Figure 1 (cartoon, rainbow, N blue to C red):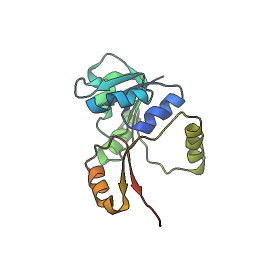
Figure 2 (figure 1 turned 45 degrees about the vertical axis):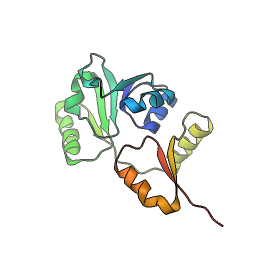
Figure 3 (figure 1 turned 90 degrees about the horizontal axis):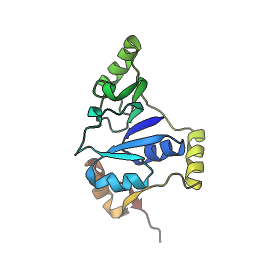
Figure 4 (figure 1 turned 30 degrees about the horizontal axis):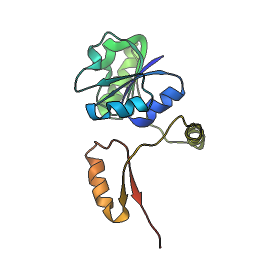
Length: 165
């Protein structure tokens, strides 16, 4: 299975733990990090548009909502599926229309369960996934952490440190 992931840390690592061949898409500054997370191939979207390739993917998992089935259909295998976690109205319409056309597009909206969290715990304990922490903020700088997060360019997790006396 070839899985093309528009880069976010955990999906790359989880896909690798499931033994998928992963092509990740990210910006120039994240290429090396994504390689260390296990991606078999990394495409720098500032240099190359993966939707213009001849490579065909079984799954395109768009976790940041930058693509659509219509943009990706030429790089999907005939029975491939486009998945997004961004529940925008146009993504729901596209997903609904695939029921009529035979193409596959899915919007995933889920709530973690105890079973899901136990599975992630097992992957972490086995060293198959890890958290990437970009920066730790003291509690007094929580507002600055939110400002940084809202810019949507955080490379890793932002941690708020609470110290007790």
